[in-house]
Image (cartoon, rainbow, N blue to C red):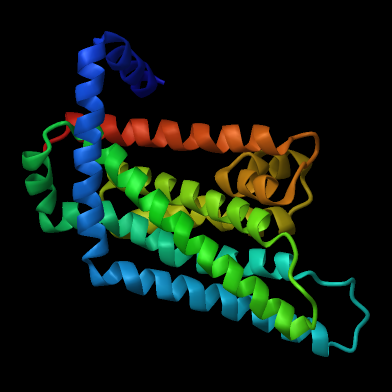
Length: 266
């Protein structure tokens, strides 16, 4: 809450000219971060892993459904692609973690901050670049997975653009969230561990427990909110409300990361 208050106070203290300067500062930082991201081999490897894993899981699930002798409800390619992206997205989330933690580990963060002393601009630029790349990568992976699953099932994919945009949007938000966690914690291993705990573990735990209180609490973690955004309303929680809460998670974590970066030595 203190981090959010500081950000609001800084924004309100800026004059119109200062705000124009802040936008230019942010745009310059975004160009720098994009150059760094696209010139690293790991970036393209993460995208390839995401596409292959997402499409592979979706196709494998489709093959399992189509060859099963047990009566099952009709499987949709969009549902199988969603499950596939649930696994494949970790390639992009790992990239989000490495984008900031690798700089702390190598000491390159000192060079970054020397070139751009405004630390809020560094964090925001990294979040924008990572989220944008994650959106495009997840969308491509989701569309490939939908057509792969549909081919295996012998059906035609539907609502490709809408479903793909929603799934990619959630992945982009998760990537920004992981980047904020990495800025706060600095270590790659601990960042990935916390990301798994927030993105994957709640879904597994919720499916294995019957306590309604625990299930409801898990539903308000990023993983549960993401499921509502991609799947629709759940227990009175509508898609727009889930999206707002998911955005609040990102704002708070990025704010905390910015505050930590501003107060600690690199």
